[in-house]
Each structure stands twice: as C-alpha cells, then as structure tokens.
Amino acid sequence: MNPITQELRFWELLYHLVNKEGMRLVHLSKNRDEAWIEDDRKEPYQIIRVVLRDLDWGREFREEVEKAKQRADDVRKKLSLRQANVVNLIVSLYEPVDSWALDGDRPLPLTAGGKKQLRTILITEGSKEEVMFPLATEWSLRETPDFIPLQQVEDPETLIRSLRNQVRKESDRRTEDERNLFLYGRPVFTFLLLFSIVGMYMLVEQEGSSTDIRTLIDFGAKFNPLIHDGEWWRFFSAMFLHIGFLHLFMNSLALFYLGGAVERIYGTLRFIFIYFMAGLTGSAASFAFNEQVSAGASGAIFGCFGALLYFGVKHRRLFFRTMGMSVLVILGINLTLGFLVPMIDNGAHIGGLVGGFFASAIVNLPQSPFRAPRRAAALLLTAAGLGSLLVYGYTKPQDGSGYLAYAQIGQEYYQEEEYTEARRYLTLAAEGGAESKEVWFLLGNTYAMEEQYDEAGQYFETALDLDEEFAPAHYNLALVFMEKGDLDAAEMSVTRALEIEPDNSQFQELAQEIERRK
Image (cartoon, rainbow, N blue to C red; front, side, top):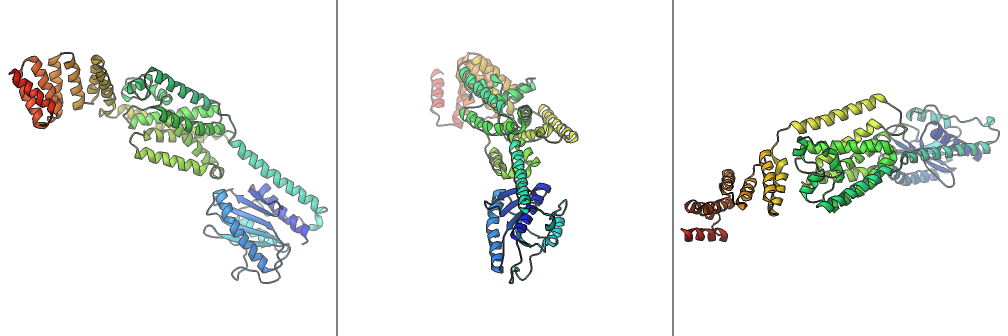
C-alpha cells in the first residue's frame, strides 16, 4: 500500500462512517490525518479515532496509543461522554517491523467491556477486510465499509478530494441542522411577556404596593377563597403579578433567557401554548397544595425548564453537548431552594415543570415526525393531571389557613382606623375557618373603637374561650366592663390579666384606676 492508497483508505473509512452510517465528525486535524468521530446512533455511545500514520517501529505504535489516551479524556469532556469507550483506528502502510503488540496480545477488534476503555486497532492494506468485518457487526453498521480495489481507481487523488469534500459537506450539513434546531423561531412573545409583567408591576406600584396583600388580591393574585367563589381567571392573572422588585427582577431574568431559548426552539405559537399551559398547571398545583396568597410567573418559567427537558429527551446527545448540564444544575438548585425556603411556592414550580414538559409533548418539536398517538396520549395525561389538581383543590377540606389573608387585610384596615372594612375582612376570616384568638380579639377591638361595647365584649370572651391565658383579651374586656360601669367585672378581668403578666405596667395602671373609681 503506497501513501496515496493509504490516504484513500483513510478517507473511504471516514466517508462510510460519517456519510453512510450517520456518525458525527467531531474534529478533523489541520493536516487532515486525524479524525475524531462520535457514534451517537444509539446507547452506549462511543468515540472513534481514525488516524493516518506510518508506523515503522513498535515504539511509534505505542507512542501513538499514548497520544490517543491523552487526547481521549479531552474529547470525552468536550462531548459530555466521560465514561465512553474509545476505539483508536490507525491506518498504516505496514505493520511495524518489530514487536508492537500491547501486553503481549495483538489488539484485535474484540468487544470491549466496562467503561472509559481505549482499544487500539491497526489497519493495513492486507488486514482491512479482516478488521472491518467484525467491527461492522460490533458497531451494528448497515454494511461493511466498501474499499475500492486499487485496479479500479483511475485517479486516486481526485477520488480522495471527492471523498474529503463529501465528508466535510455532510459534517457541515449536520452542524447546520443542529444549529437550526435552536433557531427555529424568534423570541417575539418573550419580549411581549416581559413588557406585560413590567408594565403590570408599575401599575400595581402606582395603585398601591406590589408587597401589599390587598393590592395583590385586587389585581388578581391567586387567592383560594375567591377562586372557590368562582374567580377562576386568577389562575392566569396571577402569572402577570410579582411581589416586590427582587421577585420581578429574578423572574424577568429567567424569562429572558429560558423563555427566549424555548421560543427559539419551538416557535412562537408552540411557545404560547407551552407557557400558558405550564402557568395554568402551576397555578392549579398551588391552588391544590398551597393556601397562601401567591403571584408570579414562576410556574410558567419552570414550564420552560420542562420544555427544555423534553428537547433533551428528543435530542439527548445534542442537549448534553450544549446546555444540558447547565439546565439540570440550575433546575436542581431552584427545586432544592423550593423545599428549603418556606416562602417559595414549590407546588407551583413542580406543577409548571411537569405541565411544560407535557405541553411540549403535545405540540412536539418543529420539523419532528407527526406521531398522533403520542401527542394524543400526552394531551390525555395533561388533561387528567390538570383535572385531578382542580378537583382536589375544589373539594379538599378547608383548614382555614387560606383565609388568614383576610385576617391580615383586616389588621391592616384596623391599623388605618378603617374599622368597618377591618370588621368585614375579619368576619370573612372567621367564617372561613381562620378562627384564631387574634381574629376574634381584633373583631372585638373594631367594635370597641366604635363604642359598641356589648359586641366587643362577646368577641373578647370568644378569644378567651380559645386561649384562657390570652392576657390582652382580659385587659380589653376589663376596659369594656369599666366603660359599661361594671367595675366589679372590670376588676376581675384586670386581676386575671395581672395573674398572667404581673409586670405589665399598663395592666397595673388600669387596676389602680378601677380601684380609684370604686
């Protein structure tokens, strides 16, 4: 085999693996005598190195093997295939003239077990068919590489140029196809969403405060009691509200990057469906498992994570070669924080994540084969999951915690001396099951401040029924009795308050005042 023939075999082998078998050319050296190929057709993935070398001595062979070992780890890292086996194919004129086998055994193409192994195979003109036939079986090739007999090649150099151009063209085509998967659409709707949530934040701040629970509820935050009363639109309106500037900033940043990436991959129409379906499932999960007032685009943003994970399922190798590990790490950190930080609505996050994944399965990726059964199954699973969340949320027993927001609103109105409004919300809290001693105590205060002492006394006594050691209720009840002229009852109440908090100067002063009046 002369040098031209040797180069021809090198390019015939590359052409077969890349153009006919669909393997991916990862790297081609500047001298075009070394190529790294990723066999990503099916698991377990492996890496193939094809190198063109003249090996006169066994020492040169072993040096080539060491060189392959050193480069293999870098290639594994680049491809995110740290455990992949590497097959090192050396195309040479002749075998080395001296002993060249590794560890006393000639490295024939036997199946390698384990992980992260490197196996070197020497290919000469006389051994090419002998070597490639078992490899074709081991690698599940559609056919054994076709090496053209030398007598049939009129112009080897022209044929080499043709093979080289075809390999490069196929590699460029595949690279362009992979690039186009990330650039199908433009992030038009993402910017519209950003404009909408920032605009809504400014409007909420103008009308009140984005951290004020009353303002948030007025503008459509997720609030279970009102959803139970028929305000289902809060599942969607809550997606456009944010609680404070930091919440807005973090979600806007996430939406800019994640939403932009998903809209580019899926296109605008698919992205709209994914975003709102994820937002709906996130809100439904929050409705089912979280009684607190909540707002934000987090559920829909986690749906973008779900959409990227679906892309990873469909294009696993491309996903992990590009953004895969970053997506998984960031997702893992956010979910962990959701379990560790009580204020984070992790139900909305997980619901949005799952909803975004299945919504992506419903619309599928652009230019993917249309598989109606799979998409129908995804639609049915999504509908069943969403329906289950809603049914559970609407039918589960209420523990009253969802109505604590009414108590908070009532307290805010009380502090603003708007006693009628305070009484209305505190009554809603009590009727909803948030029957804490503080609710009844504040209700009593709203009547007392308007000199309705009979009603005030009843609510203070109700608070004491829940906690007989609640000293402020005894004190306020003493004030009510004193205003009504019942000094004996007032004295009994303030005495009980002093038994609980004997060092309270306010209680002591009231006791002295009652004694003076008596």
